[in-house]
Length: 365
Image (cartoon, rainbow, N blue to C red; front, side, top):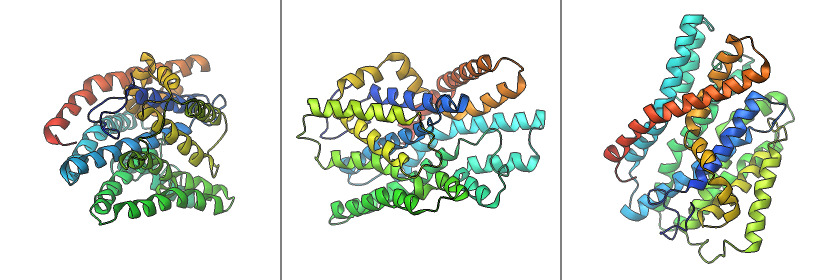
């Protein structure tokens, strides 16, 4: 169910857009598919950029709303809520990985420790960069945490973005400073990637660098900013032109999932821009056909457990793939099924109970 926001701009605290859950569901299914069968969906990694855009939009909307309601941003409350949302699942997967390493001796004690620390302290992406340049893959990145670099990028964004938003909003001419910030955030990463040498080592490192991947998050933030400024108010979001454009954008994103993108210099930005347009349209009550698809109950449910599903699936894939001698097709189906079961259980018994603390510890956000 997608409705037009009661505010002049999107308020995540006041309404729940089920279509965004559907978008998360598609994003995580892309990632699961490309990790299970790379030849089937070689570009499924773009699901991460879809997550980034959504996060940038929702987080920025929350920050703008808090400032407009209270004249400030509750940074303490923001970080409490983010910690309660992200850390419990991460803690569970770290405990699981350390337990498997302990009982089956998959890694040395040093690598078990370094891999856990890189995830625990959210520097896994920079650890991958260091490993790439020093040809030491495996020192920080082991069998269970190769995909968690994206969480590090996102959390590093959370460290900087709220303070930046608060600082700019307190200026006399915040719009001017926001335009500069968005210009740098949107154009610096793709420009640097385009100007970079066609070197496998550099391109691999660039894939994980926060400064070269932050444009996807900034695209989402830009949509939130445009909505707050009122730039989206007088647009007919259900016009034929916007509807057709949104459908075309969705088709292009799905098509790009079929293209290998690991070392591509510009496709991540294209995916982010198209996803941002979709998020903008959906948040304003447009693209009703796409909204109906995204509101499919099973897709919504996958979206709601998508965080746990993303975190748990790689270690489960590894355990199933290396612990059982079965047909490859059965192995893939079993690994995906177990990942979904683990994520559903985590959502029910870990995430939801802990998230109830959010209202008590950070009621403003």
